[in-house]
Image: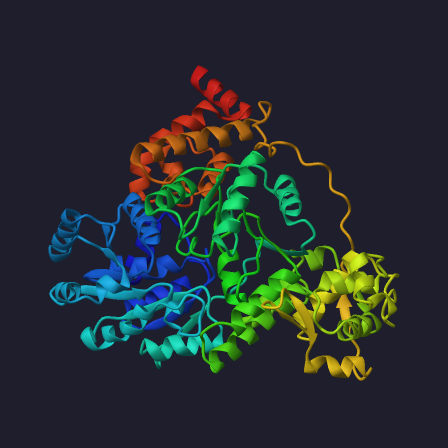
Length: 617
């Protein structure tokens, strides 16, 4: 079987070598062993169960919670010549019968099944009468009741061990801290099975967090400067936020689409299909979008609202740069975000234990946002991974943040909240601190307070940063029911007494950005003088044509990495084309001549000159 594993990797998937722990996981699974596999998004988890499903006798059954993921995986496998199908609620009954017939006849290497369908009596009965290679439980973190993607039906997957005791099970996820791993092992009955951890680092992603000043202008400036005309995802917490953001992005010339649960099913599906199958579309969405989306060329993921936890943030940002090319995880956050999430935790219907956990998760996320040190180091340490002090690819490493002893400013802020009666919001308290002459301050008599005007030396923007950090650290709380009024917490007492110092990051007012253009800058056009640019665009165009003709996304034909290798290597024969990464036997037969024809037509001048000389000779 060792030779079979290597043969499938090369001939079916077109790769010369495994990555990380892939080979160890594959061989363990081919040998019939259970396991839990943790690999970062884009790290190659799929091969860990796809290759064993092909090598072992029988059909590999993949449990997947998302229809979009199933469809992408099946299309990609079929392109590589693998016999794959899926069973989910989107299929018409006739197709369900066809898939079931193919399974009984032994004509499937892999079958993707939604968990609720797998656990039905009809499917259990069907699977009991056919040879099975393995069960792969994808997105295994969904089994965690304390996680951000909990799905009740996943709890019932423990039945697979009792119903199919001789079939190996492999659980896979890209998002699981130590408690979640223990819960996966316990609930899926994987005690004693090895846990393969291949690291959580995504070195191609640049992490950046900016304090909100004018989030629309800030994000548009980021988009214009870093990723004009490229695919990306923008996350908002509310449906209204999604609609508003998509609208102003379209007004700015960005091809932006909305996605949230309030849209009709047909519109959601159409928008998702456009995002997956077209280049350079930006999706503005709630967290309902993205899990299981296999699109490799997402160049950025932006959060205009805070996610609910570091796990959610890591998973959502992981949808950027799956192809390994440089990508950005950009987030803007402010005091309102902190207040809203704290309010959601405190006013949820969850029990006390769940609320305590949610508070800890939120505190960890806020700590990440307020960091002055390497973001990647803190993010990965949350998942138990040790990395160097500086990654060199996050905002804090690239532009070190200044810190300052903010003890006196914190005392002034806390004292002013107390003296104004703990019944006003941050904007009003800042006005008192800065000695505003607004009529309402005189009406309440707060111009007579000892704290009136004692903060004139600090600008309003810097004061907002101070209050945001005080709330983030739990020294102030905000009453959402009372229109955002601030009040002191027990933790503020030692600060007011001078028993502890408070050090903060210094957020400086950003420089005035240039006035944004009416339309976003287009993707740079190919330089006619550079044959490599012309060839690159010609290959992309050919890929798009072939994909549209088959109704599949372009990346299902070939990833960008394969096209870049074609530009570099310029294979002019099928034998040479077979050496390109990602070119298996089926794709070589299906696409080899078409892409070689493009390469020959756009070969570099030296290549053409050599070919002409050879022909003349």
